[in-house]
Length: 111
Length: 111
Image (cartoon, rainbow over all chains, first blue to last red; front, side, top):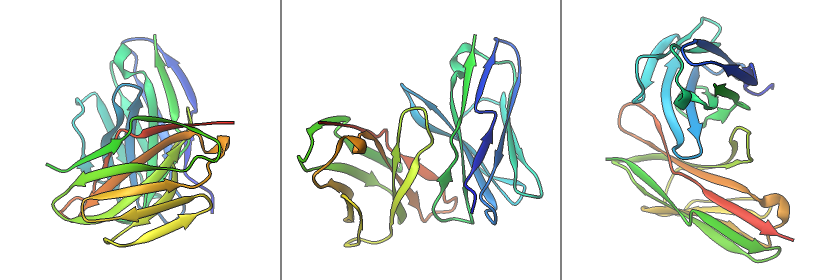
């Protein structure tokens, strides 16, 4: 089976812009979670989608949003980018409630 | 509040020098404990899932064990290619099936 894929792998944006990241889960997996990883904060949970519905949400501002499509693919959007949004954004998928498998991540740099 | 603490934060070992990484957790009810390995700039790679106290799992030079309060990742005769950050996460039985991650242990194995 193919693993979790994320596009793009690298992204450079400027403050105030918005960005959309994409994640394709492992075939058959209905849950997709998003995490932000920075050197100082470690892995921070953003949100989880299961069968097109948001199942869990972390403590991030409303500038961070997501959605999931009927084929389980998910997108994450960040509006009005700030310098502090520079991070590795990771997507993880699982069938339901069990083990998560991570994608390679999208490295976002905000200038 | 559910919490995961990993120690030490960083560890340097000589090649062949065995050691253990610790993951202490506080959770209302444990559904599962997960170990991941992460190389710089990449997504975490799944290693083990443990479900109940007394359970052990092995993979090459790695062995994970679980008690009611903590988990250990034992590394036997490590090699330089074992250098990575090792992440621990727990999943509680209550409601949401969220993962709670520790901040990781950065392992460096010297040749």
